[in-house]
Image (cartoon, rainbow, N blue to C red; front, side):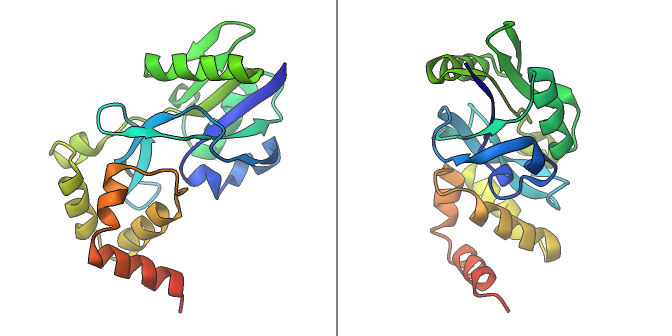
Length: 198
């Protein structure tokens, strides 16, 4: 059986950060299980930008991506990912087929990852298990219109980070909010200005 996989779908794909020396080989783009995701988390780390998280309530199934961990145990793989994410181990989802160990806030996600590991010959997998927080942070239920309004209200570094983060997400992260943003002239102009550089 192969080693543990790290699953990703957001900034982890282009910024391994502390995880860089704890994985090996390239990202296997689109090789992970399909998961429901949407940009429904407001991230202090990303200057209050919306970031993509697993969200069965508002998201749509999108491919995830896998990279091989160097860890010898699921606990070690969990700690490695938690260090990169600057969060506690309780915010890292995990599956280990050999021991039956599982952790995750969404049972359907845990089940899907376990099935994917079994089908692909992985010993187990870990993933970032942050929850959506748009509603609790803003006081308003999430909607695509509300998400766009929130992003339009960001200024300065927060606005720049939202453009950088969302436009850098893998094309396969094809969520309702992202599709709607691509139809917004102000958003297309902001992305164009970023890619044009100084």
